[in-house]
Image (cartoon, protein in one colour):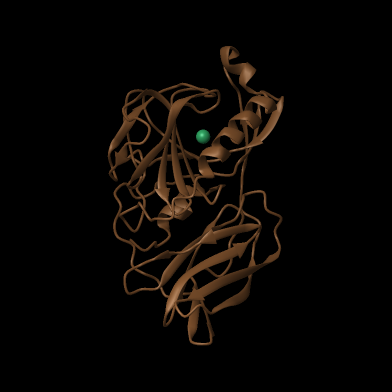
Amino acid sequence: MPTPVAPATPTPIPRPLPTNVLSQNGTTLELYFSSLAQGNTGLLHVAGQGIAGAKSSFLDSLVDFFPMPNDGFYGLISVSMEQTARTYNLDVLVWYEDGTRQTISTKVEVPIGSFIKQVVTLPPDKSYLADPEIERNELAKLESIFSTFTPQRLWDTSNFQLPIPSGELTSPFGAFRNFNSVMDTRHTGWDIRATLGQPVLASAAGTVAYTGLMDIRGNIVVINHGMGVFSTYNHFSQVHVTRGQTIAAGQVLGVVGNTGRTSGPHFHWEIAVNGNFVDAIQFMQMWKPS
Ligand SMILES: [Zn+2]
């Protein structure tokens, strides 16, 4: 099977037509997806006269929309890779400058994602990392980092770029993984082929939400892109940025290493939206207002 290769440099994504448009009392809600598979992100848009704000209610998450000049309000919704596949309610609450409000409701189908199975063998000095408790603790720490909601869009390009420009994807998001025949888990990001010391670039503009050493992800950089969107860059040998720093799209964050739970040097890239790890390639290729 050929190795999938994603485009190395971001080219602007043309704005697509909405897949579904609902109108209610002069306000329109547009959905830019027909269904949202496990691990996918979807874009919503509300437009009309006198709108002051909007918020979505979907899968137990309440998420604020962000304004775009003369173009209404946009919101992102996401589906965990472990969400049960079925149809769910989506409610969008819209409030107006005159103090009125209304809810526009629809349904979203969540199909099963297509995820492969993988067997990973860790070297003896890292085999202690095949431990569900270490993984739970690390996920709790990340969940806490992702729970900061910055109500502004900090990204400045319509599509995010691959952190490693060659872009050879080696291991897909969502894979069911078995480590050393002792632990089953899921792959929360994409792996990209990389060599030791290779520079790693920020996918889009934002601020550094966290840098440090984690058991599984090794030396990690987390970037907050605003509106509930975070990206993570993992297994670095060296980190070149500090917490709180403002980052431009394409800025070098550090260099590829072999720290954390690895079976060799590689680069692991994650995107989280509203607290869910999502398919970073699907997110990257989705048109986003900027
Ligand atoms: Zn990985």
